[in-house]
Image (cartoon, rainbow, N blue to C red; front, side, top):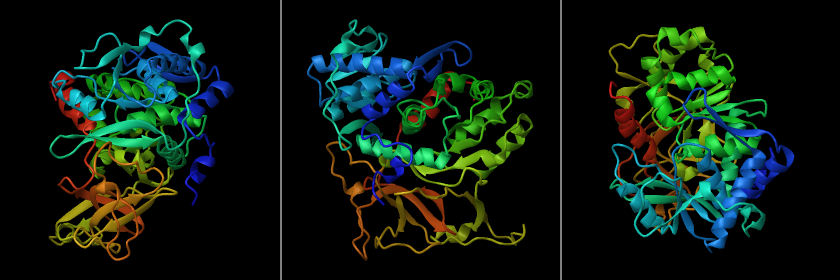
Length: 478
């Protein structure tokens, strides 16, 4: 299948600049983003026209500093200024490097390491962030008046590097995942296809904008489809999980989600009195990714919020990673999640044997796994034996390898064996080695664990950082 075929099912911009300019021309007054300043009522709005103007202003400023082709660190709290700066970089032909802002329990060492690895030339930020060594600092809220009139479209194409999405290896060394315009647009089309997006829908996102789910799902996807998105900060959610579900209820959100812990947090923290205020009947896609998806979490959440109109069938587990831009596999929106019990002893030796006992275990240890659907259009998934690199048959556990137009260009200034794997018996490839273990059963992908080691793709650290450090900062009672 042609690499652009999936995106052409919707509309086929060649670059992210064309995408935003298209929205500004054809939906100029539509609100692209609403940000809940306090996580509840106080709102800021950004229309397609305003986003285009702000992006042109920041881009013209960057171009006047001769930064085209360089890297810019984006260091912002959650909000609309980050979005303007992101597209300002893209409009200037500058590679954006989003990073997690300094948290209470986190030093600047990681941010400085990312800046050094990316060889960033400038930090784009607001007026409150600390300074980094040897880097110019630009407060994008202070762009010169009418400078947007000086903007000239950059000479870029689908292969141009747009974003460095940073991960770390097992030793904590930063690795910048190189995402081109084609990678980002293809995965935007993938998400739109998987979630069956429509312009009549509305997303609600609390996920951090520097994380792949928050960046591609929460910022690029609404612009790709041409529908609004309501945003609140991760801190607002962690402090009061009710704010997330309340926003879905108030705005009639149709698509929202997060990692497994977010649903667990709602079950633990939202009171019966708060539940009585919720109407979740519009929520048709509750995606679940970035951590192991647990059946017990889905069951507890469904049981608690079914009286509020939530449907268990809305849960949408999927598999993805930053090295594949975001999404790799998923199911159908109207299908309930696939859960199956397997012989735990067999799983431990690499075999997936479904246990069919009508509820009787006969003393066997069972492990229930949640399916992550099948490969999305244009994408390919194979299960490879860790030792021989041969393709595993269905029901055998191996490493999950993926290929397709969403796969990143590699790691910035690193050797890229992770992105160039080939099957041992045929030489077929190249594939991305995800570092995840899993198997295919009945056409469904099941993820069983991770491989440890530097030869495989690492985990994006930001979600773990957010959970570990932000919870302790915002939720001391947890």
